[in-house]
Length: 133
Image (cartoon, rainbow, N blue to C red; front, side, top):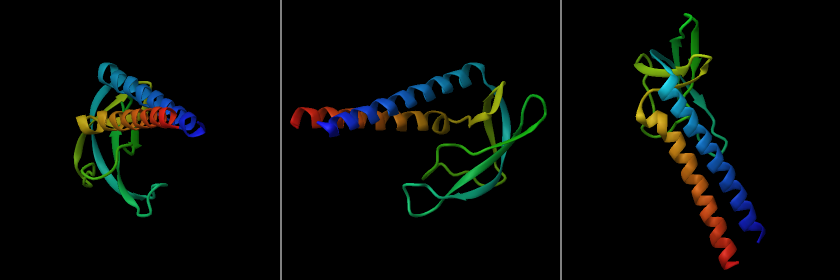
């Protein structure tokens, strides 16, 4: 019974985080400022759940006040890399340019879909453990 409770709580938290991120993406699409950024670097990052490091692009752009802002996209993995020097479309909220995203379908919805899928998986696992246990 404890396993079902833990899986359900983790699933609920992941689902909440995914829905919160979906609301952020919606705000970015509706109220975000679109601009162009440039990949200025690719840095090695050590993922906590992985034994091998991966590479994350660092993207720089100028906000509406002309200040340089750098960010690293949250979505990483196969097919998500961006070569140094490449120009990319960026969207950010006017009051918080640090919360920027690369304005592609993959980078906008990928994190949302992954987190929601993991949340539903854990909720389903909690139900299965609860019914069979």
